[in-house]
Each structure stands twice: as structure tokens, then as C-alpha cells.
Length: 86
Image 1 (cartoon, one colour):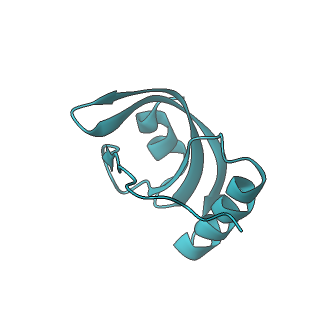
Image 2 (tube, rainbow, N blue to C red):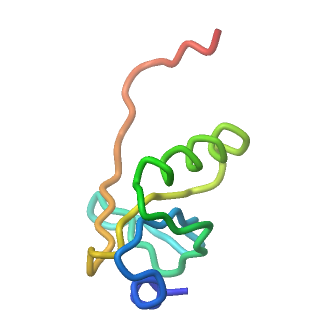
């Protein structure tokens, strides 16, 4: 589904979604197709479910975003350094 469709279905909600069709452009992630995982009234609940899913499967590209936003604006982050996975 497109972001505009999600905004019409999930009015004034936080949604946890997976980016299905996405690419990078000028330091931003351009999300063309999404799959809504769940909708919430409270953002903390969405972040909690995001963390639980991400812990099990880090390969999924998921985001939490509020439908009051007309457009998705997701900046890419470059990680510098080394992680210690003890």
C-alpha cells in the first residue's frame, strides 16, 4: 500500500510498517510501498512492538510514523565505529 492509503485508513494513528519497495536518494529512504504491521494511539506502544520484532529479525526494514505527516521523510544514518556484541 502507499503512504497516502495508510493515512486514509489509519487516521491520526501511529503505525508500525515494513518498507516493501524502497530505495535511497540524496541521503533519504524513499518508501514507495509499505505493509502496515499494526496501528496505535500511543507511540510508545508502537516502538515497543518495533523493538520486539527487530530483536527477532534485524533484516526487516521497519519504521514507526504518525499518519498526521503528509509525506514520509526518513533520513539515512551512517553508523561509524565498531559494535561490541558480547
